[in-house]
Image 1 (cartoon, rainbow, N blue to C red):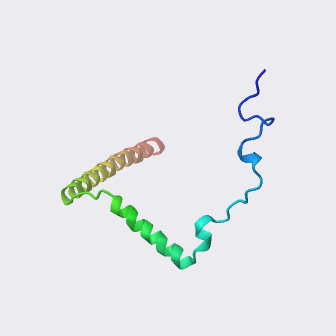
Image 2 (image 1 turned 90 degrees about the horizontal axis):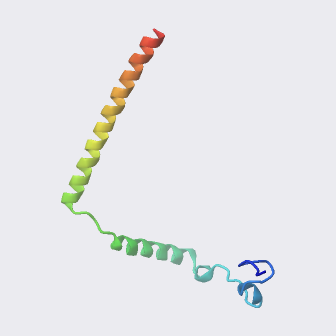
Length: 93
């Protein structure tokens, strides 16, 4: 019968080379805290440049849709709350 993949009998290729030292911290360990902070902010700016920002027209449309949805949900919750309050008053007097 064949052994299952990843069985205990056969070590992985990574386990066969114990001569290598594990890295501690990588490149970050060599930099000071201010350099790491500067790198962090540079990466933030780089990611923000990749964002596709909506136009003013799209932003107005999205905002209008959200406000209308919220008003509808407020109305729905108000009607349900009003109905439950009258039902409780009717049941419990």
